[in-house]
Image: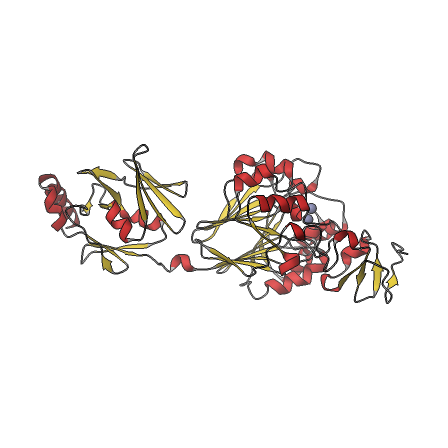
Length: 463
Ligand SMILES: [Zn+2]
Ligand SMILES: [Zn+2]
């Protein structure tokens, strides 16, 4: 029956193009029929059994700005930051620069552009169906599928990194902060973890990234653990690897996993851009990954610096959000790199008044040069990005500027910090003392002069 109808339609088409307008194929957008006229042309069904509709009339009704590129011979529709290009006679369309395969092509008939409506409307996030009774293509501009929210949490772990991604029942934890933040991470992610923790990623072997994992792996069952396979002769690393080995998870660690990627739900994926480099500096062997949900891309750089940015330059493209490499250090986020990824938003994970004076002035300056909105966990606490795949929100409006660089020890500037105390034990230390790293974030206090009510640390012997 369908075949017969198709044959009839094609016959009608060939015999009398003007009759097709009355062949009964309609288009409805948000429950209102699109009005076609002799001037706009009318929908018809092509040889691949796809409904071809007049481009301009349909996409303008859908709310798009419509253009025609005479040189590239392509129709262009734009709406809400989405740009779809439809080349004539090609088996693909282009959404925001990315080619999407299509099983039929746009064509020109009687001087008008017609296009396969389903692929193009779907590229705009529309839900498209076919109503056989009324022979109508039904498009809903605000679909439900893409409305599902993904949240990305840049947890405040003090000096370190821990990023938690939650999308429906799928959860990924990238780094777990220093050991002192282990319980912070465990408690923070608790309301979001459904059953097992799906994927755990350790970017590199430094304590401020893996120190919290033993606590996390003790509290949750991880299905998959991914790290760059490198080792380090430190207590933090040996505790980390012991926890990993005691865990019955799929362990992905080979360099072959470069480009390893997986879907985490509808239109959402996580991809490893670089598993590990061959550098002496562990920071530059950081695992780099890209989280992608619809049109929103989040690039997680670990502690990567300039050499790794340059070595991988051809693998990067434009992203919406950058987790700045190495806590906003001087040697990270070079201009060359930023010009490729062009982030709208930059997130710096660092502690208030950290002894490394991060984020560094020069990195903050580069973020400001590209007019990125920059946020710091030291300033905002946990930073939460919520996205539906087309736009995103951030839970804070506390933008950081160059003035916050290396200058984030409460009311003191970094250079004014002479001693760091523990409000719990009432001991104070020199900023470089190893004991400072073990102080819980909430107990850190900063002094520019000898604190009267505190005892001197016996390790670093501050005078
Ligand atoms: Zn780090
Ligand atoms: Zn590091």
